[in-house]
Length: 410
Image 1 (spheres, rainbow, N blue to C red):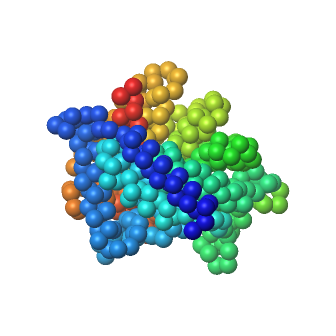
Image 2: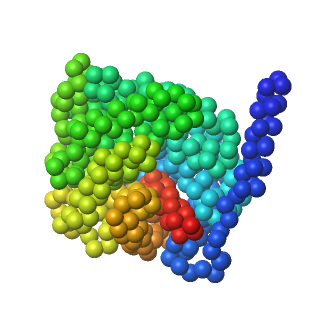
Image 3: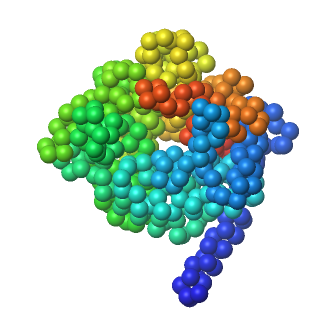
């Protein structure tokens, strides 16, 4: 073993010890019966069962959703959803202070190491920031910085100069994207990947990542939104001259409809951009899109959106809890900003989260593939993942619980 490897190992051990010393502690009494305390307790038990299954397999499995046959689907490191389960374990460690979760979070995170070199899709931000980003924040493992910066470099290979955006999907051969006639499609989901770039600039001192993120956020702000605050799912650009070729949808009901998770990505993405830049126009857009959803005539009384707010068979359409958990998490962050009636955003998030934590959306222990939440939708137009659990719904639900706890503990 080289001296370099010895010191690297010692550094990892030191980081682990520091993490254990600074481990978050559960503030509330074990007998606390508030809905959020019970939600955390349930999440720890349910994901604990998922962990038991993974560990018993002898493999590093990564649960995503349920198949039509009722089995858990596990993904590889390159899947855009691969960072959410490791991230959920980090959040549970933070919420409960349970130190037995720490080595598991580390193991599941480091299984994704090769993802830092992915260049064929845009979701490396989801993969790396949710896993390694939380890992760096909670374990202080210096090696994670290099992974995040390399991942940001990989993401930036998808930046297209003329339109000033990061291309979301490759358009090749007879792919369904090619059949749509797209050239440089950008989906609103891509806003979520910008957080990795902002982090990379802070970690490396290289402003390139920050500038790419701002360029993408600005062009998306200009091209992807309607006057009422709602957003298109897909904007297709010309690589040659940067002009807009199409404004359409991939996962929504129609090109002009309001696909709910797209609205959620927009709210969260621009809240994050405001946090990282201080540019008020980003927060203004996030608030405008949230108000569009809040005031929509088809929003159910329990605040959990339909998969698309313009779907034709409302109220007999599937709900999408992933949209709700993403919006709730964003609203908790908005409530910490200097905005008028900031407390109303927290109250609204609390209402959404109480719905999610109820038996209507939280699965009984041991059921639902051992995912926390029921009733998410992946893509109805692709007949994929309809009314199933999804690991990113759980991830943002746990993040929302964490943010609520931080606000109330201040």
